[in-house]
Length: 197
Image: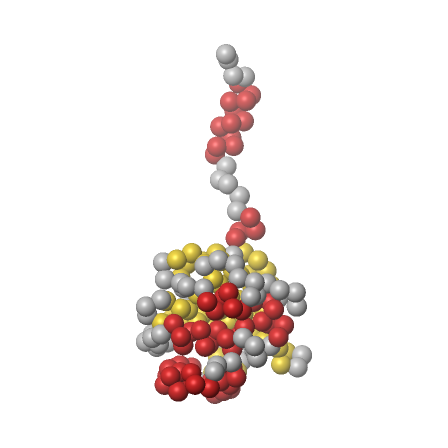
């Protein structure tokens, strides 16, 4: 059976065209593009949700949560094994001291009192790494990554700022500040969990 020449030409033309990527694999939230998938610690992670930290009428930073699989509840996200990423995109300059203070308060408000002594040294070490920056600036991208077996890796604009802070428990405490019972911002928590805001 002869295949018409036009069909062969069309097939050859289609084979030469690269497949289209859906929206280049990113979503746009508040004017910023967030990849739907990325790799952390040699694992593929999915964008679970996005939100923002607001103070009065200001968007202080946008934040995205990446997990190994979708989680619609804080309990599921916190219990999930494997790498994770919280990515903050700064919209305004902020003194590092204010950033450290908010971080400490978020962890303390969302952690059982008996757990706080075990977290204190690592919280202080992370605070010192942030304070060393002097300030975080509009446009900075802050990655807080969990690498199982290594702990929390803190990077600004792709550059590691300190040695890893060991312990998955510390990362869980940090994540609870964003999605726990008393988060920084309830709308942010809902967005990170993919819930209605």
